[in-house]
Image (tube, rainbow, N blue to C red; front, side):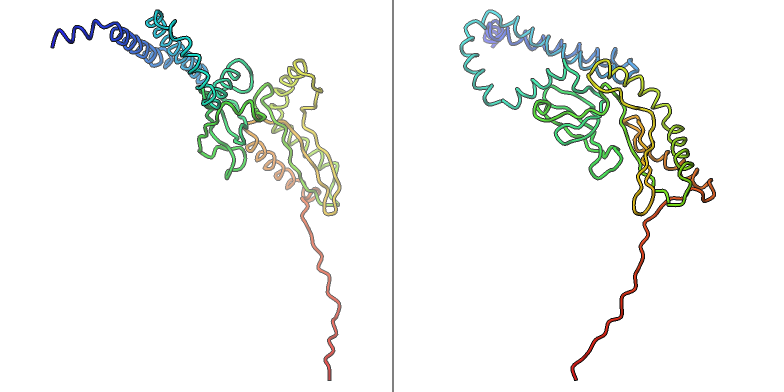
Length: 299
């Protein structure tokens, strides 16, 4: 029994396998130790996430290096076999290869990064992880309005970055333009209504406008794009029922619904304070009496 066990242990194939297993165990232990000790002390969530990803990728590279070193003298005779097998694998795993290529593109480009709010493959949400094959999103919308989380986690193949447009709400310009429409009754003080709207929207979104102006200046220097207005803007259209004021402003992409609520709340307070000089419009309908109808019956 001891002799046969000794022969097995002295077999070159077994010794190489044992060396590979020992090397992989050591690498896994080192990576996990670093992730728990060093990475766990990092306070910033984004830096902590990136550090874990770097350590995981380093572990994979080290594992491949161990395998290549152990079996280096046996790989030369397998070149043709690897070539034939690789062609078949490439054909059968086209989607997987495209996803890996998408991961490489994401790693060296600025499509999106963890923490960005994007729309990819028809799904809208915040990027919480970018893997080798899939991007993980915390989904927004669907049955929930206002760009809020609905609780679903969605995993989308990285190959979609080559197939469909990638909408990024928080890329180079982390702001969005938003609009609200306010109906004002005919006979109201139009000039006061305009001033009121301008004051309210500047009060609520003034900080966003100042920060967005700096970000937009960087966009103008980097891209061929016009120097758009980021300050609040109020426009007027006369309709059949009321004067329709449209308020346009920039807002942080994560606070669109909260900001709209603040604008409407302050606006209603200011309109109430005018004592009727400015009043909200509402649809009115006039009921017209029907003409008399004479019905004659045969005698």
